[in-house]
Amino acid sequence: MHSILVPIDGSEQARRALQYAIKSIKEGMQKEIHVLNVQPIILPLGEFPLIDANLIEKAQQQQAKKLLKSACGLLDKANLKYTCHSEIGPIASTIIDYAKTYACEGIVMGCRGMGALGTLVLGSVTNQVINLTKVPVTIIK
Image 1: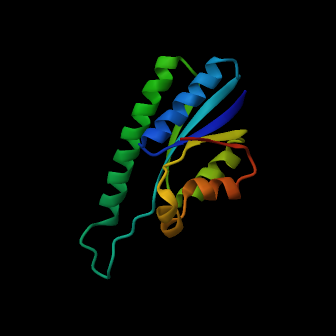
Image 2: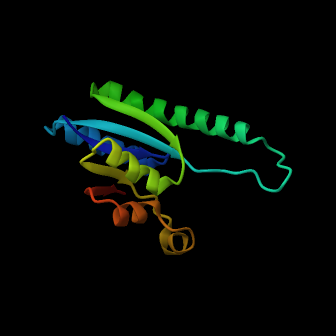
């Protein structure tokens, strides 16, 4: 069975991307969905951090679990085969590495729509994925 990757981040655009993937599969694509949440690397600042790195990681894992639970609920309701996974790391490269590791044939992802200034200052995960991956990417607004 072939598979597609749907990265989720809790945004409405990511939810629409997942719904698009579900609809596509229900309309005849024989694919498994991989749902991935990537939490960014957050390091405590300074020599004497006020917050323990383990507490930060635990909070990130809880957030990922919450987001994946919501996504898995949609997939369960649609009665589709899927895999849910979370990782902590650089978001775009983690998405691309996951797609390679699991031989995903495509990526369906939401576009956060930060606007020109936000994209210029912060960069865009969507743009990075499009430019660095070799698999087709479908962007959902």
